[in-house]
Image 1: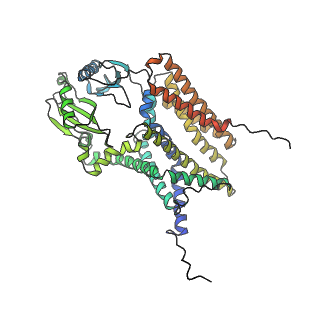
Image 2: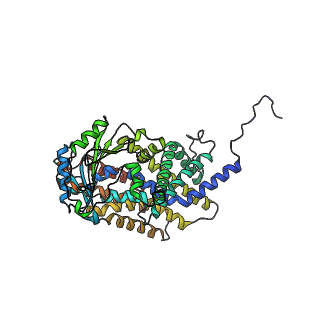
Image 3: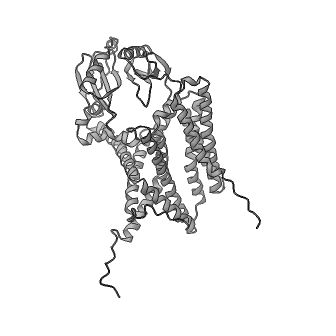
Length: 506
């Protein structure tokens, strides 16, 4: 008999059938995009530290803390000497910052003449050719999977939207998400334990996951939409489409009119910094240098704001023709400027980057466990898929191995394609091993051990090669990256190093 004094039980916001439908959609979407999401999250966790990786690639590059305007003029003049004066389409100088203490000179020439980037010393003279083969490879793998014709960009954009849908559906499918946040189910079946860990990791990192998923979807959709708008509204004129966000782009001039002198950058720097007090000088670029319609762009950095950059453009006579004025723009446009630093964690120093890296790895763990839950459920129902289990293990541990193998060739060769070939070799080898009828556990242990060896070997060989050039000239960030690689290698190898205790006779 019901007690009239007892309060009625609260009904769930969603019915069981509704929750089951959400879970079914969550599982289907996760299965469709799991491999792409895992690779994108894994590379994204590394790309967060792209500046540190660039310093690791060339630890002997000259360190510069401050640059005078006269040195910038000398550096630009040196750039023009690298190729024919009438071939350069743009020259730029990136000034040192606390996170990247290097003076970088870059030139982009017509048909490749004089193109390239160089590290310069404090006087502005080019000292070393820039080689960022590994970091460039990782960025492209994260952004477009190294696929041509925009195919990779579309796949990454779809994966970003799928990730956002997975985060939202995962929340909707767990009405007790807050109550169960610190209740980790253990002691039951393997599948129940995996599901509990999957749900708890998703709950603990939910704010981060929402931010990353939303910004990933936003960036992917924006790139596609921007290309479509440029092709329609601007009739394919990328100059006009790009000018609305980053300022006008100087049109290519006639061959005979591109040998004129370049103005000194000092007055332009003084005008830009005086108009924006509190902002630090970040870059200078000259478009169509020497031409009558050349444009001088000044980039400013605001370390106190998410909108990290402001840009001012002048003509050769010193007249301001464009100013980004990001903080005065509508909120929708401000979001476009802020979305990239928010997505990659490039706004709060090394501790924010470390948090992004760890939380990014947690997203890899959530993706890996989600697919494994599905495989375990099939095995529990008597419908195992051993081949698929091995292929998924090859994905989870084969990709870290492939990324380590991508960096190793760069220690011995300057070939631009070496990282891509190393990654492809590691990926093919992992999936080839998965084709043999071995156990999933043995395959996973083997790939974990190979990944640990590759990471440790990469760190030790890199440190040895760096030391041969003299310890005094090595960038401290290089030592930090090597130490991090050794630490990661230890944690990867630790489960495989545990020895089983021999059974003692009773």
